[in-house]
Image (cartoon, rainbow, N blue to C red; front, top):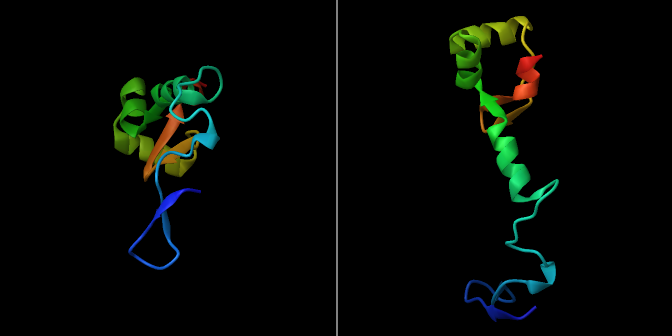
Length: 91
């Protein structure tokens, strides 16, 4: 690795540029994985407010149904915000 010796502590090197050995950096890929997959999965995510609006209830009703177990568990979390896939809610 070629680098610049840091003034921070002895032996520490800061890389001088991109590691070109990792091929494909910055390229959008199609198919599974890649940018297209990320964008489509983000569009497919419904948060509490989205689900509530879709089924015509308030967000507090969504929370009540989750506590009772009468609603499917979230497919994932983004920070503390829960989300569901459209296919999960449409069941």
